Image 1 (cartoon, rainbow, N blue to C red):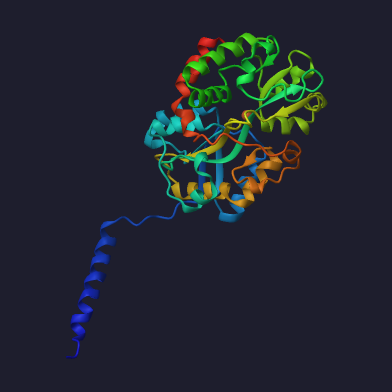
Image 2: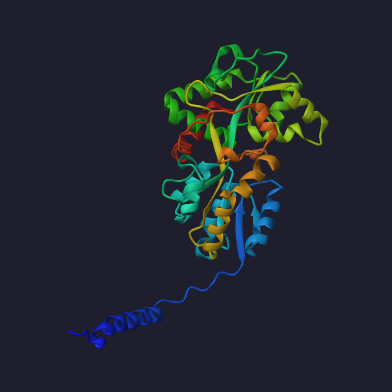
Length: 348
Ligand SMILES: [Fe+2]
């Protein structure tokens, strides 16, 4: 029997009709204007280079509003649907997890981000992604402490360091996240004892940021300090000779290499729930995770790339490789409140 041409065409015609009806019902998705608005807690001039490179590649202009993560999060809450922000950028996973739990972010399903960023450096629900890594390291005075005398964060609580430990205030998110990681790894009771014991070992009441702790070692105010790795890189090439001098007086310890690895954190970002340019935001995240940007971070800001094989920093080579705590950084958000309470009770 010869096929009836009419019968063959009928299903096709129905399909065409269905598609045209669907198009009439669904609003056409207008192409986004070539703009991306960031709310960012990052504070590096070299980021402008990346914005330029992104614009060259995509034609999209990046606008930045800078403030602390807490200020940006409360602004996002206040603005609701009217926010101009497309992407929230922070220097701490705990803050991103917090923004996500406050329903301020939206998930993004991107095979590129999943491939480029290791699982523990991004949210399991795809609400935020890390694009650089920083280790919270210990430094010690080369002339007053022997190599191997201090190896772990837990060692900082040893009474042998009484009056010798330098660390910035517990109000810093860097220390809050460190304590959150201690809660996750050692339990709350041990973390509480650690906060108290470190408080008893302080060389002085916490003062200044991480760089100041390193400088204080060179002024012989204390012998060991806790500092984010990239500040050491920045001090090593600082315009201020006193900072370069301070850097030359210390040795770096990546803590806990014989057990879980050093506490790390990320610079990361999540697309806001009410982003007006979510596609541009996704493209930017993929750009940050891509090889070109990943190779810029280590040389410009001394942050580690999320893909360590792309580490271009000669300085990092002199420090040697290190093992990082594989804890999913979302855990920092879960333990953040408890960490803040412990630090408040600890009084530093
Ligand atoms: Fe910083």
